[in-house]
Image (cartoon, rainbow, N blue to C red; front, top):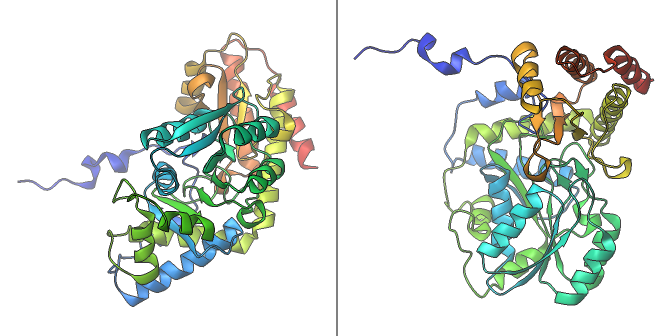
Length: 394
């Protein structure tokens, strides 16, 4: 049996890409270097120190004092499943805000658990209306309300003040999707009164995909303890997972190297300062929007509801969605996301997340997109776009 050389491994032939889609986002070299740290035993006291350090960092980024704040082994969908499975039992009334693909996924997960789901819908590209949410809560008296803070499919950022006040006044639990906001957009779990939240590592946090940070309030922990039935899946049983993080009782073998990466990524956030990082995401978002609009393109979301980390722009008339994205990737090595669900063929999604939210990336994608559109016969002012973006920086 001959031994393969590294040249036969397709991993070593991967092209270099500038990841400006909906995720994953670019990963800093420091984070990749941290991943190369050798694994250690999952019951080693030194490993427990890393775990505790990571939990403290996550609490600060989530702006919470929740003791049960930890990264689930798996991507954001695993975090979503863990939160929904923990709080929902068969026969529970649940209200879900649906204005995009991931609101629909919350509905699907709750229905699979036997919940009676009431959907509060809005068109894709708009936030959930607080009045409609309040009416649904009064009508069905739910156990849990589920909202997507950062709808990755549409680029909508849900304004939280009114909706969280309504949920708090009703005395029901609130579950929130922070997948594309945590680490790049303000997330205030304790101030908002959120009972369960989940995110992922590969977007604004700036690490590779593989972990899903979650946080549970004391009320949510109590609700889990008072369940009438076991959580349906051993794999996402938050009590068992927390038992490992708190008391080091074995549940599963954790992905050491992913936690090393997350800790280093959060250290970078701490060095920059969370407020500064949020301001950076906003500044680059505004510059990108200025450039796109100067190019003659239109944003899919009203200004007050836009997600700085994920920008949805309408595909101009006459443009071939796949051809534009394909030329961007093949000619310039830039990944730009397609629309999901109802947005398929209607919007492009440009991610400016974590390490990827940089001035040079804004200018690079504007120049490349303008070149591609002009090449494909879609008239646009690429030079005007660059000028507008530069002006937005001041």
